[in-house]
Length: 256
Image 1 (cartoon, rainbow, N blue to C red):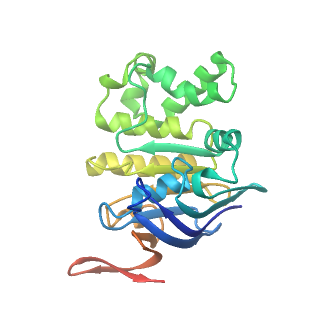
Image 2: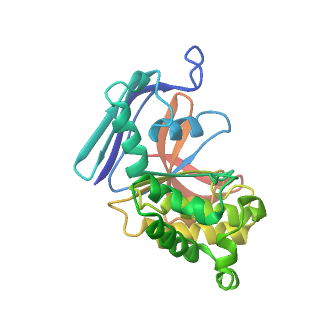
């Protein structure tokens, strides 16, 4: 079971000008795919950072229940020790962002092995898993030159390749929750669908023991990901909406 509760969450980047104000909501265990949508600059990325323990709230509480364990924190991370925070992010969470999370000074082999090395895996075993993880995200032509690709640097990749490999890196240690900030932003429709299929087939699976939380501006993407709902975020407004279908002005959503 994976469940998250927010109670009175207030947060952002400046305490005197919070972006999110008093957010109370539940991410239930039966919703394994959670699309975050809403106006630009009104809190989607901020919410994701607070959910992922990458940013501490100014007020309120964040509470995760996963696999029989509970993690809870409030202002400045109170309630969660530094060691527990590191363990939470390292063991349970995976991160994939629009600009990719690949280290520019590391080869693809090293980038993909890094999450496993952090968890204490032997270098040879981590590199073998890196090759397996890369194989899953490559197209047939790329798989023929996988050895060469493993030795490439991120600067030698196309935008689509970077996105796919960043997702492979985020999924490498089999996290419970995968956070993605516009993982398909700025990509063509073909590459976007490839990435969606990759996440659905290689990671989300049946869903109860995993949760995908991602930001998107594509109205049709929740349906492509197999859900007809979204979490609408707009500063002090954060609630679930259900998709009603297309209308003259685009997708039509109704508050649940």
